[in-house]
Image (cartoon, rainbow over all chains, first blue to last red; front, side, top):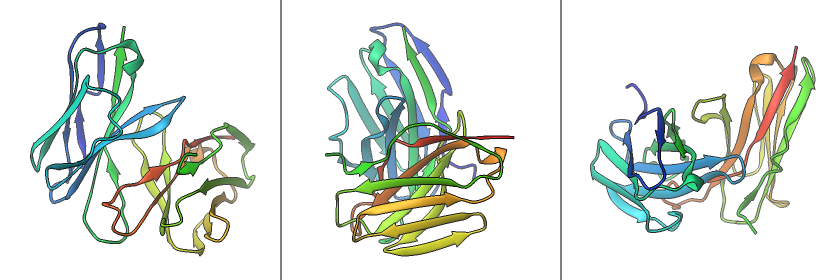
Length: 115
Length: 112
């Protein structure tokens, strides 16, 4: 398996534009997580899905953020409209339901810059 | 109070030194304790995993968990320049929907 695949790797956009980040989890994994990483706040969990169903979106900063998982192999994180404070590295991660240990496998991240 | 506290200050050490990192946590339900390593411009990768209290050793790396104090540590012996990375502690609870709570991370630089 190629691991968790995110696209694009880098995105530069103007304030007010819509941004869509994409993620392909590892095949067979039950959980998918979206994180945001900044120097100030570290790694923050935004939302996660179990078997394509959103479980907890309490980390989504505001209504401008939305996430979908239409099937087991694809998820999107959308920001509309984008703002400069959304600039960060966004990671997608997936993991397998084991009931015990919970290793999460991360993608390479999308570095978002909103100017 | 955040669930997991990790002093995010950077750490520079000479090659061969021992690196000591630690985290504290507040949720007594946490049973699984992990350290992730993140190289520059990469995603975090699992480095060490420990269940409940005790020590675990893997080569030059030792992870310690003290549940009574809600305190975990990572030690790197004989540090190498290739150990230069950000180290994040993470933890989770049984039946916690695989949700990981992460510390902010420590950037470690090992100087040759």
